[in-house]
Length: 330
Image 1: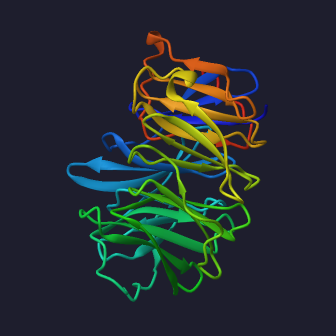
Image 2 (image 1 turned 180 degrees about the vertical axis):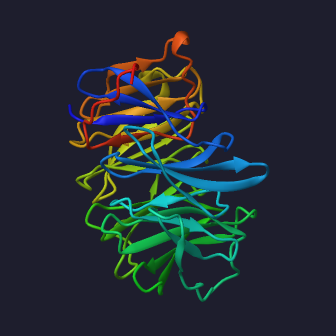
């Protein structure tokens, strides 16, 4: 199984877990001045890593080369969430004006702000999720409202022109996270209403009836690289779905992956071949591989106390690149 799992830590580093050998080493991120990371993103090959956090009450975004920890750029913005384009050239951050700002990842400069939507309903209080399509031609953001009965939307824009394309309704209270299919034609979203919705990006039409993804309001969503498999997770465990039909394939309770209590699964990601998922857990500071065909745990990474790695608890990323982690002496 090729690939490298990226697990950010609270100590401003990234743990690179080699999926083929089981070895794991730490890469220290250079020029980090923020406190705990609030959100992060990586390119599909794992070569670039971006994160946002707080410093003296103000947020900032930084970009690094993952393998070396070399600092690339700092963005002049204050977001809670971000998205990184698949080629590593653009960073998207929601603004307080309920739009999305696009930044050049190499220079950190804002190069465009997309058009404000023509709100058909009362605008949300904020935008709390953002995602690029894999071809980097579209960017989407999901809204939040403190009233759980308020309908929230996913807004979709054209990256090249900044034009607002459409509003996708269906969730209540909040819409997070958002995931595009590999061919950039489908968009999956999840909200507090416990539903997962799948829509066609071009028409906005639903691809199948919304599915009830959980028994709780905890949100989590991952899509396989081939676009055929969908994973959702909540306090009670993980569910695997057919991403094209919405049919449920398998339910994996939290005990099966080694979580010690409800609500402790914080991240799920598919391996490049979709034969495994990696699951990160905050209760025992560990991660494991699960076979998607059987639902069985097939390998784990438990951090020794001597390493002093404490995962940030904001997900994991399975990079397609099996790049070699640096030796501890480098």
